[in-house]
Amino acid sequence: MVLRVRGRALPDGRWLDLYADGDRWASDPVPGAELVAEGWLLPGLVDAHTHPGAQRPGQPLDPELLRADLHEHVAAGVTMIRAPGIAADPPAWFGTDPDVPRAVHAGPWIAQHDTFFDGWGRRADLADLPGVAAEQAARTGWAKIITDWQPGDQVVPTEILREAVRRVHEVGGRLAVHSQHAAGGAAAVAAGVDSLEHGMCLDPALLSQMAAQGTALTPTLATITASYHRVAERPDSAARRWYLAGAGVHGDLASAAAEAGVTLLAGTDSRPHGRIADEVRALVDAGVPADAALGAASWIARPYLGLPGLVDGAPADVVVYDTDPRTDLSTLDRPVAVVLRGAVRHHR
Image (tube, rainbow, N blue to C red; front, side, top):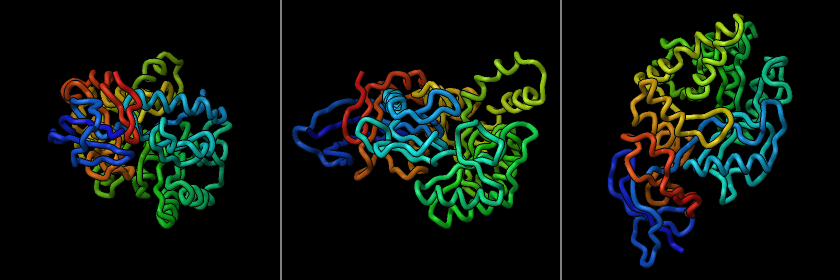
């Protein structure tokens, strides 16, 4: 069966009539094609920071849970994910089976000894981090280094991160880093990493450098701000003061990043899955323009991860809505249809 969708495509609102016979879009009319949806068209949503497949930090990868998590993403309109850190190398069907999103991943997190969650990630001496990252990126295209963790922990130095960037790029990969401390974020930006994950406590003065060198920011804003009130109820401590100081202005950082021209990516980070709409709304509530916030979860994120949008020959992904989601963000919770790999995976 040849599938057909039509409507106004974002971001420019042009009228499109698209056909999919398999996993590629074509604009040439196909007689007898089945019209499955009409409305406002987005070229598939993207969750650029998600860790499916484990119930809690430190637990092993559960293939059944992994597939269930990915189904929740698809139901929310997500047709592409990036897992910058996953509990173990995923099964062969990850990112390829018809019922799960397209995917890239960075393998297990890479961290110094005595940091990060017990049971997760690969530990290495500082001097060995660049080589471990390059080996991972050569296999999957991405590597992820935990550059800082708890208050008082040693931050991965700029020279180590810079060497990791060099070696990862040498094998054709890209490097993401986790950072939630000012020193870690400064080291990551100075090293020229490809994406800064979370970026809490980052000095806003560094945003212009990020924009100039192409370092993306995935602020995971909704999950960071959701934790603010829970942390505020805890007894005073260095960790509490650090978190409240950073989380309290994280929305301002995301808004300033958008204004500075930094590539913003939308990512949800934690359970439950399928909450990309919450991240888009959190960005807008923080002052990020709706176009930029929605683009961070669609037409900006897709080419960043190597996928074209709604053009001839592009992968046949689309999410269809009744109304323009830029003017009514609640419509993101009610997709009319989700098409993934040229087949309807969800229909209202």
